[in-house]
Length: 140
Image (tube, rainbow, N blue to C red; front, side, top):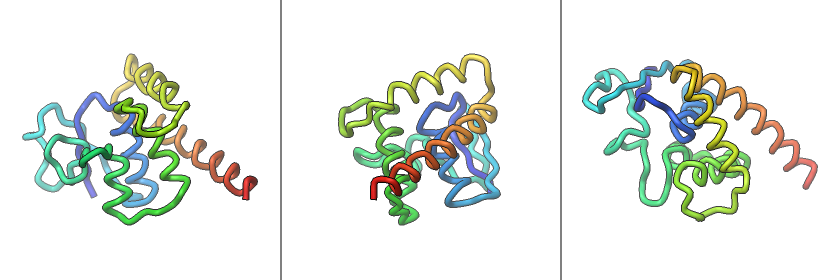
């Protein structure tokens, strides 16, 4: 399936793309648009103002996708807290990792195209997920 989001991706869009490929649509293809009117008819929009899979209430897109797809995995919700704070910095969650994630994604944007940022972020989030799962299992 084709998915569309705004060009110039940052933490919420990059992490949401990772969530889409890892839990919703493993064969996802991504399109990055400058104008919301440029979303292809055959694409599902995410993190575009006014779309269903975007910021909803106090939630960022990553959280919205978790809710819409009934994903209750505690590790993914822990990642959601980090993504939320990195994206909106509203103090809703205690996520001391958020500024680091924000810096890394912004730095990648200096010399990488959107698809490269998405792929690099996916690699980081795969590792973060494994680390948090290990931590969760050891803490049980």
